[in-house]
Image (tube, rainbow, N blue to C red; front, side, top):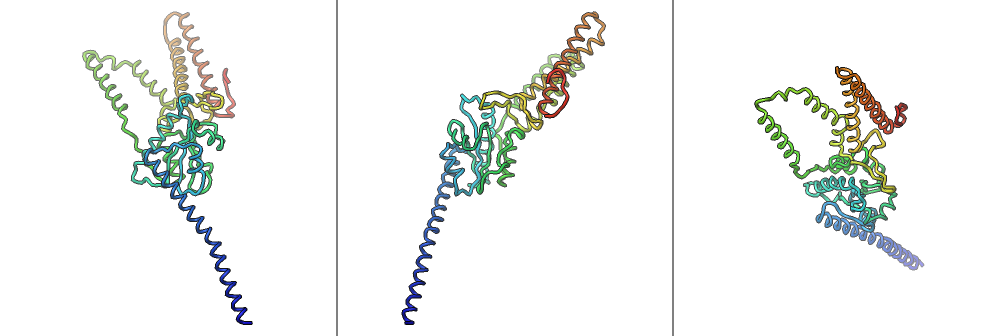
Amino acid sequence: MAYVWAKTIVNMRFLSVFFLFLLCLPIGGGQKKKENLLSEKVDQMMEWSSRRSVIRMNGDKFRRYVKAPPRNYSVIVMFTALQPQRQCSVCRQANEEYQVLANSWRYSSAFSNKLFFTVVDYDEGADVFQQLNMNSAPTFMHFPAKGKPKRADSFDLQRIGFASEQLAKWIADRTDVQIRVFRPPNYSGTIALALLVSLVGGLLYLRRNNLEFIYNKTGWAMAALCVVFAMTSGQMWNHIRGPPYAHKNPQNGQVSYIHGSSQAQFVAESHIILLLNAAITMGMVLLNEAATSKGDVGKRRIICLVGLGLVVFFFSFLLSIFRSKYHGYPYSFLIK
């Protein structure tokens, strides 16, 4: 009897070990399969990245290599519309900055398989745009190695601009990957400065016997006003932030030249502000001329009316732009 019980216990232990082995077998096989799939995806991304710094993706590639697990690498995706029929000039400008950033990462000593740069064009991956409920381009998003993208993983293009340096700072905040931006040499500024110096030097040489024009107050006043107009219109902000020239709504094709937020602006908006300030200044100059000159009274009256009209109309226009950007601002004049 004892022998039968002992044999039964041995059989039960054997069956327990056998079933435990069967349970562990698919788990180990699944883990091995997962590792092989991850290795295959990383190798494929590295191969594409070796060919070009920015990997072009369609809907299938995006879902397989960006969205689907397993994945131990971060992906920066630029959603854009670069085809000529889309007429997206901002997309082309943003793409140039994106290429500079991707090349800086690809050819740096810190390059690794932990970060990849990709692009999804609307005409090659419209289903991706629909899947993400995306209705504007360009847009930059970070897809982390683990988890789903958060709100901070969407780059605030309208507020920050798309300069390579700003994108690199945002990537460092999201991935802890530091990218030093290397721009290709651009000699246009040096050439322009050399031409300007040559032009001024040639003019001074030709007028070397008569340099009274250097003391011309009107000329220096015009030069000073040009600098003031450039600075007060936000040209320096544009140079630092690199905003788009304008924004075209992809749904209705409407182009916006004035940004709706007080925290950002378009390049076209700076040009508009510059012209408005110049018109107001011209009106003030005419008013001063009408008040101080000793010419014909009728002519002075006409100059006064023209100057007053310039100041009133264009200041009203400038105030209306200010009111549209600072929502809730209560005051307006002539133009709302």
